Image (cartoon, rainbow, N blue to C red; front, side):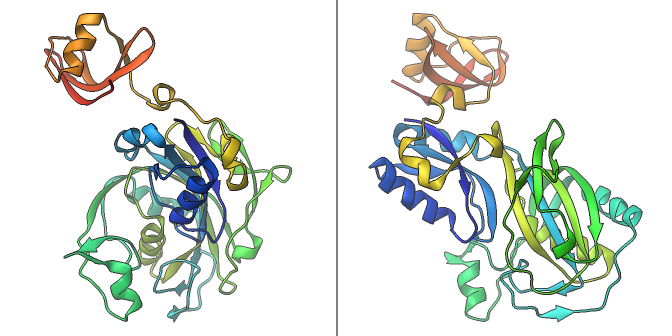
Length: 310
């Protein structure tokens, strides 16, 4: 019943990876904690069998990305799927100006999702309407940008680094590191390399669009690698072809919350759905003799069960 971090390759949808995991593990019960676009690569966290109960607790995990943002060219999908729909001549921007622009996006933001997204309005997927030539009125959503760091500005995406290694600050360019595969470029456009840490629900394609707009030009996401989801780093992710034998993490190790060690009475009351008195505040994992009992929310006076395990 493991939680497995997979390195999603270029061109596969998240559902494709889930389908392969179902075949490899011999089970229909596989879920994931956050979609990656087909043209993005990197960490996709899968929950298998009973671990699917954990998805609700992991969807809100922060995520780290490396994003290649090409300036002077827009696309309907906001990424390298294309086609180009707006192109303007643009010189490589001043890096100090770019850093000022990125700083303006830090913290809580209202972000308009891409038209080519799985968001539903009135039961209709936005991407289905977009592919038919239409557009939905997608309201802005609350997101959080924790950090946006400019790693460099380059004359073309072809000149930007593709080889990286993990560091204490996140994945960084390293000629001796691991080479990432990006989509085929749509042209030769000035490109920013940004290391981002964002909250759940943030679209990096929308960020690329909005960074371009702040610089006064169209822009698109020329490449994206997700290097971390919660406690799962890309360095520890398994390849899709290795899913059958992947050990992953057990449920308890996968939950990144403070822990309360219960006695028999407390465990019994939580499994019965009661609200026992306790001084804990915030979300916690409750264990009994090292086994998972429940995930709870505490208000300093009592515990409320969010989910219990038999």
